[in-house]
Length: 204
Image (cartoon, rainbow, N blue to C red):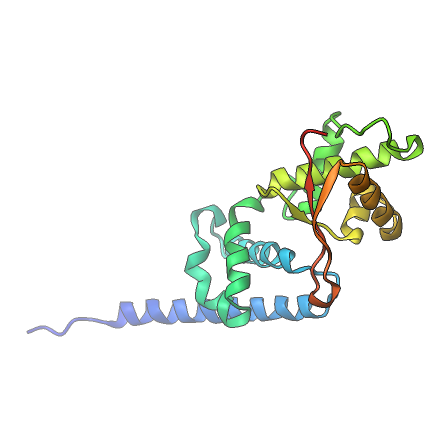
């Protein structure tokens, strides 16, 4: 009986092993970046890891849309954990936007392109109406883009939407909550690096 040639299979397994090792190295590099950045919230981890995965797949000459994150579950769990992998599953199909891999840039582009602004009640302070409407609109778009009915949003990220300081953004978030434009679903938990959770109130 002729002996089966197993060399092609062995070579394929070796290529797969080498590829996984390179991926793990990429993810470990990302883990170091995230651990050294105090501004990264837990909800952002899935998007950051998914974006790095997409870039890695693209850099290897492949189309990320043709791959599922389950294929890379072992590598993601090895470097991070099951919770982060669950966040990656949620983010995987939501991160390819016309403006690239940056979620806030995509929301900023939506605000710039559309004349629509979230309506504010008459009681909202007149001198803050423009910025208040922009921030509420940004929250609405964040919910739409991420397909969630609520979003984690730090004062720093709100400041990115408004192009202002996180202190001014925090005050405006508070005003929007007070006037019923948005709802604060869950307060921030700084010790756990979790931003507050907000929901745009459609019937404002």
